[in-house]
Image (cartoon, rainbow, N blue to C red; front, side, top):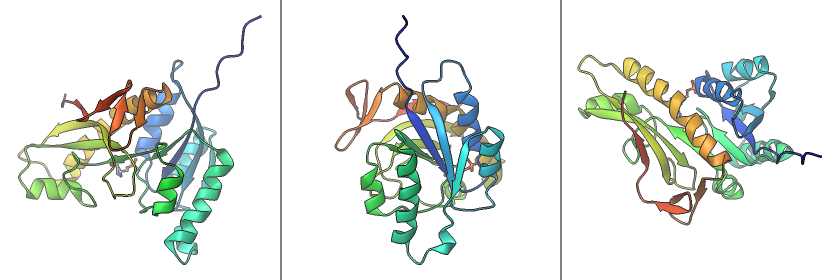
Length: 220
Ligand code: GRF
């Protein structure tokens, strides 16, 4: 008799908007050898297109509408309760536009990944594309990092570079950065599900070694 295959790590994705990164992950998860399973998608905005993408893919969805809560703590408490219902092995922030409380981040330490549209530690926060243009950067990009208490400050696992072109606007740059995110995020999530990356005390670990600088995907 054949032994049952080991259960795949379960992935819960949080999004706020269009969900193009979510779509890239749904597409990747359909590949036969993908090592994880997307169990739910949560949004803080009831109108987020990400919800439609998830429904199209028959993935369970939930909404925790931040406008219905008096404080960040109450919102995060409600979000945490929804997440715990699914008890995921990995929580993927894919364009989730909420600052999370320390209690939330600590509760899921080592299981929370985020995509940030800059080559961290450059340009934490918002408007990253315009700020990179204003600074005259020749190279911009995106980062996938573990989430810690420090906003956009957790250990970076991998980055993808994007060359800045003379004619670029914030919009054209964003478009190329997002195209790279759609390649990079599924790769990193595969690694996580295969047990290849972990959060150490100050750094990410890759195959049991400290990752002193992030892996870099050059522009193509
Ligand atoms: C991405 O560019 C991501 O870097 C940022 O928000 C954007 C989300 O886009 N955090 P989408 O909702 O995945 O299309």
